[in-house]
Length: 381
View 1 (spheres, one colour):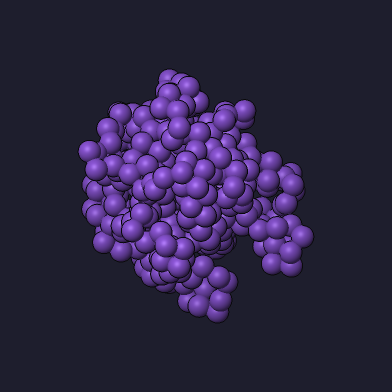
View 2 (tube, rainbow, N blue to C red; view 1 turned 120 degrees about the vertical axis):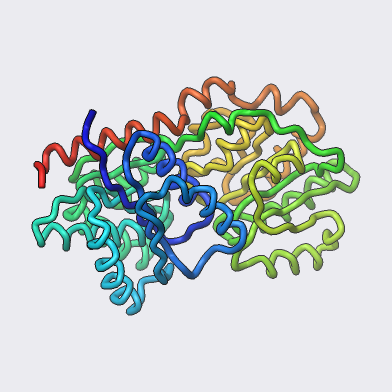
């Protein structure tokens, strides 16, 4: 057996899919005999995320380091880099794995500083969409993608979590000049269990961050259009937290939907799945969202925008896919799901296909193989 590794995962915001991805990796990597830690932002997250940290604590031998890491590039990044360097140096990791744009920046820059001091460390980066969501024709996008290109020189391995992400990287940044692999997001075996809906269930549920990129406004628009198509009042819930929560609440009130669309704070996803059979994912941009994989594993009907890697999970020709950023087409699919009780059963992918392609143990195994391969070519301490 290869010697145990000291692995530190770096990312900005401990919410949503990136946090889920890191938690799954930490658990599986610890079970494989390695020591794992997390470095992430101290400015985001709430009570729900505190509970998730408590859940993962037994798998974090290297602990949790939390520093203020802002979304946008700013002068405060200099202080974050310095404090991050001191923390990381004391942990003596073998692997620095950055997730998302800011996490990738920290892992690669700080890993490279450690390299200057003749310290062996593998520097890896998983984008999770992140900087790839920027348009390649906008000034900001060109700057961000240029930075990604330069950071390749500080990168030992790139991981793409879906083929869409790989193609987007090649188009916007360029063909990778360092080692790159495709490793799908994976969920654990305990996620594969049907979750029945409660007796007071609603017709549709949105679960996720309340920000425009995720499309909550599209969900509200599509819900109103679906009511008109069906010809009777319906019910829905929006579950999550985020910077635009008040905006969406005002939007619902102004449209007279305040009594038919409820809002609840973020909760464990298994509890959220119990409120409806139909999970709507109206995102404007995604990589490979966990909510889709989790919902399918829970036996739910997923209605989603055709963005990112979602078609790789639902099937490229799936009837459950709506045109991106199109509330009318999203409403069309939602209407079909309500009018035909067998619609979901016919149009969701086979559960064994999901289990085979999107497994957390396989994701962690392939990621560890990449770490070991990189370190083997770097030599020993």
